[in-house]
Image (cartoon, rainbow, N blue to C red; front, side, top):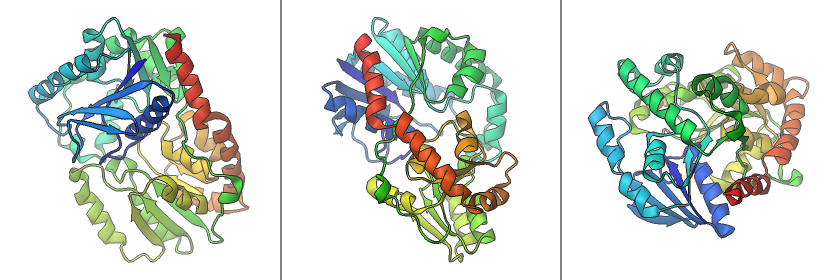
Length: 376
């Protein structure tokens, strides 16, 4: 069976959760004998065709930062020959995209899956929220016509899909069902996988209180709040893993770095991956993620796999409430004090570790996905 992912990234130079998911799932499906392709926006340094982890990757230029509707249309047209060339049995979109609808129209006799991760801002409230911090949205006037047209196209794509996988139930119940009236019989809960869950003996926490940030250093993440926490808690060590995903975000990042560069307890590591990343997480007590908006980030799951409690301003599927402190009022300092007192972080982290093993273990997720694919 030939499977083709439709995605915005494949974790080459842009290191987001979507690309990481494609790499993990694609690699495991290839190991099980599936013929795996991915069609993606071209990342810096990518060839038009390359093979990664058993995945045959075809890329096309797409200018995400362009304000021109015509330019976007021209870019979208370039995906059409790639969809035809792959000729897959199943097209699996990582979140709904314009390309999802194009694939459905071009290949109507094939199966189409949408795996909902961090849905497009379907409501004006989402745009307003993001525009508070994102310079890309601050410079754009809200286009009611374009927003409505995109919403209508996505509505058709969701309704045309054969299966809709949701990695966080919240997004089906409170957004997708309300906006698109999707039939519940084709919505399936499919948790995101954690590819590596350390053994108990491999998780050795630092003796000193330690907080970690893991994610893109983009404005939506509000990572500077973690830097400020490092200033407020000089007796706590802070490790920051990640880098800006786009050049347009680097100016803000450099400004923040200059403001906090003299903090001796703040360690900005940059991007790391694999065992190196899990080694850092295994030493930390708490993961802090102060994003203004999130779905259910892989960073949460990877941190819980390493027995880190969560400190966050978003609470998808109540994971933060269950396994950490939900800073609903952006009371991060109060939340960190709570987690560091009476070993609250330890209890929450251990509970989270058991949850990840039970729900998000890689083999369990792949087995669930393969059953759906084989049912086709």
